[in-house]
Length: 288
Image (cartoon, rainbow, N blue to C red; front, side):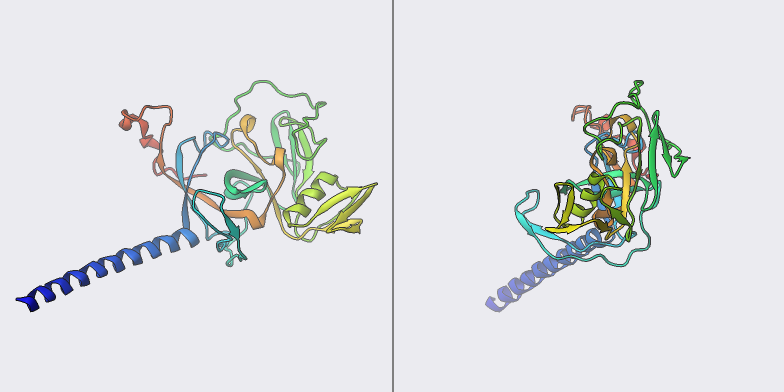
């Protein structure tokens, strides 16, 4: 009888550990997919309306631009942790003009942003009376983009919040050149804000004193750009905090490309109206 009980208990323990092992494998596969191929993102702001709405849950392709290995270890949903060395796996392509790109926000890399790439390295961005031009050609407004403000800021007004200083305002902006890897930016010929931005995005120290530029405490008359940069804008052009205000996105901070909306949640609808709260017509919508 005792032997029977022991065999039964052993069998139950074996089943338990088999179950644990099975779920462990599933978890490892899920984490592997999340780390290398696809990841879910929630959209908290309306800067990409109506292409992507507040409350949309989006899947993004991570592998197309080259998957980044983890660069930070810490307590989830906190900023308690530390950075570790990382590298990027080979990419299939670089971000292209018109693609919806997921990236680390350059001013706070704990945050992920989603915007449309309107210009890549070596291109020039200009806005005139709300019309976007890239290399002198009109950039066609995305299908679901919108403008919510009928007012247009005068071209003579320089918004102090605009990047770089003196580049105008949201409605009349630039022209601003997007730096490419290998470009030489000469101090005095290129706006100092642009040089500062690309230098600091390369994790180098920048300062200018008494008319001279110093990089990593060494005087220099120029800076050779170390990586490609991109200019990002929201499809909700009048209500988007984007490259017009904070600068370029270096390739190091690019995470992936928007793919599909897998869930959409109307935050204005009360929870008890769950059938109305879910935007069923948006589920499965391809992001373009």
